[in-house]
Image (cartoon, rainbow, N blue to C red):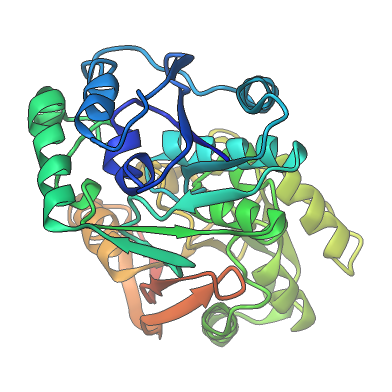
Length: 386
């Protein structure tokens, strides 16, 4: 049996997979370092020192360029390494919060599964998402000394790296190495759940589980009731910015509101259009486009759980409405909306109320759990000029 470790950078092989590299009675191990397209062949023998030295010589400084491999490259590389022999693949978690590792974890699993090889994912660095493991390997004190010694000897500049993708600190040097197996759908959901925008997050339908999560049902129902308390369906359209796949759109339209949903992601927009029961357009605009060409007038604009991506809040001044509903988790309100409101002279806060309280909830069919941080609604009214 050959153990094939597929990692992003060389140090990952020791920091996340030391128990694999030093397993008693291991037959053969290969480390595929995707960032440099390099294969490390640890020397045979039970003593770990030569293996750690072989890996340590390939640790590059923080300013070295690295690019992940694509699935086809990984498939060919893994196949050539296995060379028809019994093999198993070890790689990063698709939900590793370092997106370079998360992508390698997803793509290496796709490549290995296509070749019929079993895959073990390291839980790795996951400060927001706790994965349920299938195998836990606590380090002995000797292995802990080896791992920390490796970090000190070979990763010195990375101990103070500013880039969180490269930083080596205590949470990234686990004292227990945990591994899990997952099916393709579960793997893709774990990866999408930690993505933020773009094609990666939209690779699976309903990546944030709006349609199956009790927390999200409570949040969406409370948001719908809050909006309906302030507006009547006959008063005019509601413009929903960043409508995703339409979980809120659907609720509002069932209450008789005319909704003008906007969603810049084409995959989300297509799913939104397909699920709607009314024959009305779905718009591709983001907040900046709506402010630059203010052609969608509404009784209110709805900015519900979407101001997490550094949008310029001064864009609200140019929206063709006098009412804006904003909903965010409490920490984001304190960091973004509240400082902006303190200096803005166009809008005033008319109401603030909690929509849903924080909970800890299982996701991805129970493979993981995370904290849902709650949501607070803030009603903004445009100031009148006299």
